[in-house]
Image (tube, rainbow, N blue to C red; front, top):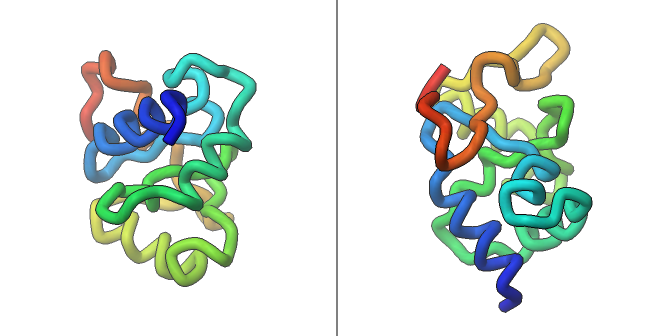
Length: 108
């Protein structure tokens, strides 16, 4: 496993319940701001137990249909944690975006 993937997995473990992060922001936090696709590949190969359902596209759109058993499953997991959605089905990033480990914001 690469050092970059280890950093990404460590960051994903820190995303609190009720919060989400984007692939691009995780790439930035892990030290490679242009590596959002690599973060996506890392999420695809992530070890069990990581809250990967909390990682989204930059506009708050849910992940592809191949992950989590489909977008509805991901949405159910997020809603169970209190994440709210906009009328168009995207996560309300203004309320739920996790800025990173140094962020004082823990939920909504």
